[in-house]
Image (cartoon, rainbow, N blue to C red):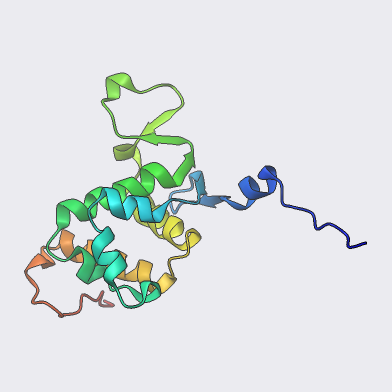
Length: 157
């Protein structure tokens, strides 16, 4: 008689879908797996994401090109949905519960770190998260004026 294989338990799935990371400023945060396709859909980027010839090598800079508001909305969603503890929210301070952290209270450097960590934990490669970080830095410097196809690169000082 053939032995029955053991099916993974819900607890095993949960354990593999969470990870604790330490931010550059020293905060410890639990991140989790996301419904990345759902986030792309809610931010309006799903058609571009799905039309890419190789979803493993999407040019994220082109995906967000000319859409800084959608870009920021996308990354806020990554933080809001990708951090499981502490609970991060984007609502009026007067409505915050004692166990909630307002998204604007996360230092900028930590936001970049957490966005990259969450993206990597969800199967987005380091190369792609670096593209996202470079795009965000470029937008902050007013690089939205670049010509299509022009690369955005950080330069070493």
